[in-house]
Image (cartoon, rainbow, N blue to C red; front, side):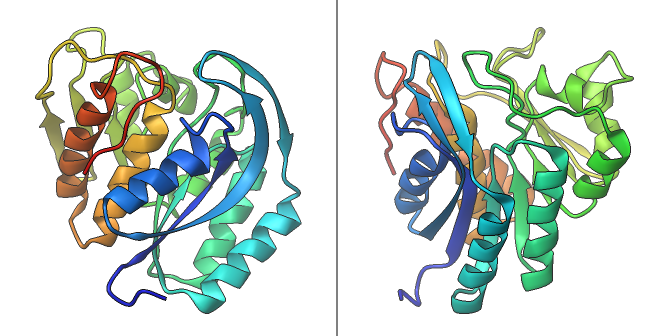
Length: 251
């Protein structure tokens, strides 16, 4: 056990291309010099170009895995990725809170794959709010936020409403007015995060990398705004690391 590195746990899917899911998260954790742990919610069959199928992990196995890791490690931050249902997600969050009240939780709101395979439905708004109240940050894009707050047609208004329950980083990759500009909504302020790079190249799993970079920076004792700013710089380097859909990780 490395005492000089904080522990960060990814609870997400397994992507054999290693562009997304727990493999991408672990790569990101290592670059940030935090000690990465991982629990798999689903084993996918995919490449960076196409999603074929997913075999979900039984919930009890995931919950037992969480309990086991928290017994042996002092986990500072958990990043949660893909889940098959709100109930599954809620039980994961409850297990984390049962194990440690102080552990921060970041949810990367993966509602469908980059190749349009849908994972999770947001049809129960009350249950969603129950989950959000237990989280520290969610990281939806402009399309996902509209599915999280289904009765509001404007992404920024959705983010402001949901920030009553937890912080919201509204990612700007699909921002129709200011492409690449993110907005961090907290309960008392809105922080604009401008891009520093131009001509950004798309990457498979970029949302996973961003959220895990935020989680790593939170574990390194940065506040939410600073963690998001540092993660934005990291993801921009990642996106522009090459001209393929699988990026290279750099410090």
